[in-house]
Length: 112
Length: 117
Image (cartoon, rainbow over all chains, first blue to last red):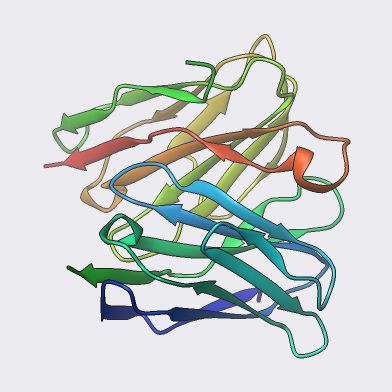
């Protein structure tokens, strides 16, 4: 059975800290790994990773994928209160529908 | 707003009633997905359309659930004889199939939160 595991489940840090969120996976027909940010509504897309070792960056957020060890990390530097959210990791599958298999998410809380 | 839209945003119903949700995808997207998310969990795949064809259904989708996308644009998800275990957020997503890279990313709507009493 396909499995995506995120850690930690929750994290509380002070504004300005740097955080690292982890995602490991065991899935069939891996095609891509995606990170989404979810506040009290729809998940919003952050990154799609398909190749190992290539870092993707967007402002204070960055992510990298290791296809040999089957994991990805999401880094957020100089955290702000607006970064408080649930961060979801999902794996996209080859062949056909390319449905997403999600982890349970990491709930990040930034204290001012 | 050209994003994915869903209606209603909230629905409260009594056990045994039927409910129907609507999703309007991003206009040029040919793929449409339904997911269900319960508290503290990530979204779980329910079903998928490419244009008007429903190409896959999860085993999570019992016989009480039916989805349609009659003209390859908007989609409806109907739950018959609702049960308390159906209480969840129902998320719709759309994407452009057949392309490479981030162009095929799934974009999510705001969801319909269902509460079955």
